[in-house]
Amino acid sequence: ASFFLYMRQKNLGKPDRAFLETTIARLTQNFNWWVNRKDPEGRSLFSGGFLGLDNIGVFDRSAPLPTGGYLLQADGTAWMAFYSHCMIQIALELSEEEPSTYGRVVSKFVEHFFWIAGAMHRKGDQVDDLWDEDDGFFYDVLVTPDGRAQRIKLRSMVGLLPLMASTVFPESSLRDLPKAVERIRSFQQRYPELHENIHPFEKPGVAGRHLLSVLNETKLRRILSRTLDEREFLSPYGIRSLSKAHESQPY
Image 1 (cartoon, rainbow, N blue to C red):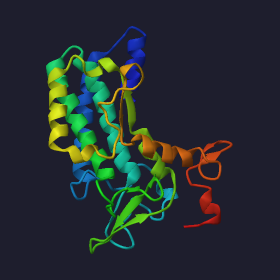
Image 2: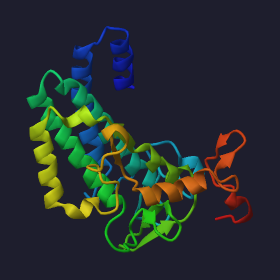
Image 3: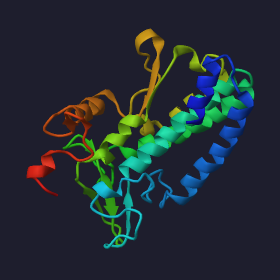
């Protein structure tokens, strides 16, 4: 919302840079709070029921679970990846006048994004991954007090929220930030496993644009095949919050 408001003003010829600088400082504090409070194991997978989607889940995700333990949430984790995108966009805008200061902010939040995206789907068949390869969908994962993990295979808006963590950046977005690009490439070389199951950011698209997304092409097609299926999420009135498949196959 902050970036949208700034861009509206900029398009009217009245960019309020001071507002954006104040905003990014406060949002950075807020982002760090979420990272420190809602990531129970320090793995860039988030819990806590903070998106208001409790009415379509098996549990009230804002309350203690009847099983004990905690939920790793597909929607909350995707929202944090999306948050990283927003911070990158704001920092890129501010870097036009202060490339040294805000170039570091860009690379910081690109790294945060890679940690989160890499955690959502790791190499190999991990039972506590949010991505289910058989179903081609993201699910919450229940972790019980004894450490066991189980995906909650309920197809809902929770598994569609990762679509939100996708942003297209113009070819010129990082052109004037060579040090930031160098830091990002160095990070990618140190942690190649984080990039194996997400869209390759360095791969250019139409007009040289770059896509930063938790979804590679295969995952995007599989999720869209459910999103646009009238037997699942697509209704005459928009996207359902719960798959129609559960009408005949209740969870």
